View: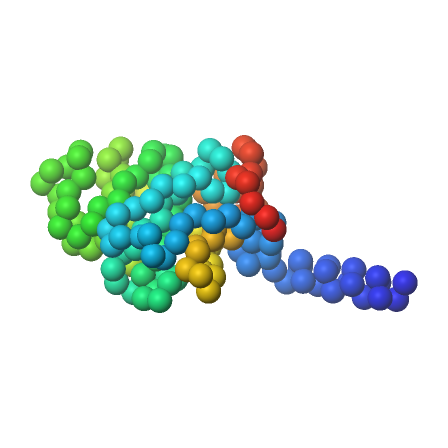
Length: 184
């Protein structure tokens, strides 16, 4: 009984101390989203996470990136839902232009939202470069195993557009749909 009491106290303290993305990540599924060997530089891979209706992009940007994983620290993943009004943004490799703005040329690996022109720096945690977006898009927390398999294991703040109330509580990302298949 004493062991159960200590376990309950430990869990309570851990939960109280972890009102961050790390603690919330414990409730997210662990889902394989790709493999290091299958990725090509600047060729994004789409996947849904943490819900089956939440689009994301996984991309090897070819340069060390904030939060990047893999042998070169250049593999990142982000929610594809723009933080401005919930449109879907697209990946732009350096030197490319989005279909909606032929005169715009990406200076680095970035996200570009054709709805209102928000731009996200994928080397810097999807920080807003320009446009009306109030903040970065959420990043997908990635892990790489010894075989080179890439797993989504959680989301980092802010909450995905349409979830939460701006508090940074990413547990709101788990509401409004069905969790993608996976294990804890």
